Length: 560
Image (cartoon, rainbow, N blue to C red; front, side, top):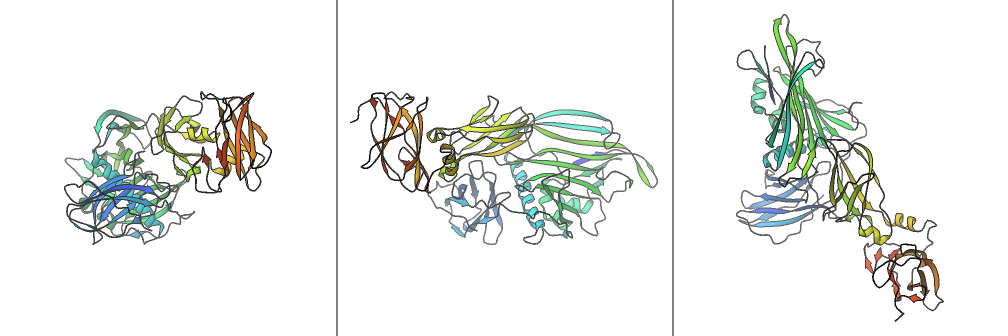
């Protein structure tokens, strides 16, 4: 950044046949173990025998990746998702021109920081000792910054930016402002010179004429070993104005006399996502009574719903210098240059970010199937006509111009088969921000409680369903009959006006069930309960003890 002033244990690898490419490569998909939910926005890295990274890819929203190896040899795969632990595979041999395909199943084990982060002595020239808060924060910040760099090189998104230049009489004084809009593939919001030159010349240097260049640390500089070796790092507890954040602070190493930068990379405690960078200049010959941070910069980061990371908002503030007055130069004002992203769209035209819209993203899952994705669910925003369909992975994204507290819910035939409605989930909508939620079919104990408020005794089950006629229409007020082997039939339930019925307290044994509506009697259905599974029309949906059987009945023809 430059401005001028005038006077994420082991991976389970499943080898499969892959289509050969021109050179040796590794492709595959990263998913969560158990549920199989794709893990997007995670780095998958190829490491050679010397422990050197030779290829890197950021997984897409479907969790897929492709890594090309520079030569045949033995490699390891390493996966890192921000906020989760690092996972690494056993060594694997990759032959000349061979392509291997892997399904990487990783345990979603979130990292945990101490409840209170104690600021200790800064650690200089190092990323922090293993296991320390500084080391954890640096690893998460590094992954996000690397993702920003990776995203910039992909040219996969179309951006609309608003750039600005402001002239102020004070840090917060009256201003004159000039704005312009730009659209295209975003290279980077600002640039910096090489880290080696910054270390040698400093972050503020004389330019042509009487001007002075102020440089800021971009992602490439922050990731480099030069910046690491010339700065000290420490952890910092979030301030009241930054609730829920923890900081990775940096300052020049002792002995640095050139103009430099110090600042904080602020990271969310929940999820350990990098939020923004604040920095200011040090070792400047400026009046000592300047407000702290009066000369410095700000960079805000954003993770897109599809996984990549971008710079969302940025600015740098430099002094406007007047005639020199001993012992300090006369500051007549400040100049701010920066910008913000207005919209980001994919190559297909889908909006993934808009400063004027709130985004809701997440997954719909089925708790009765061990949290498996629930494809094609319809997600709705209460009190509005906004609705969107989840994809085959149960993932959804809904955008709206609304702000404030709302609730989101979903509908799906799976819920209909179980005779329940999904619970609503609260979301706080803010334009230019996103809310992430997970919607789910209620777990079996919740379903039982809703269907049978009086509860069940040990060994009892629930039968739910709809009574229909031969044309498929619902039959209201039909009577439900249940007969145990060798006993007199009972009529423990009746369908409602929509043909739905619930029978609570059915014994866990072999039953014969049928429905009648006036003189019409439907065919008998034999139900033989098992100790395992939520059952819908004799299809088992969960390999755990359960008490629910969904079985539709029919009337309209005589008993066979």
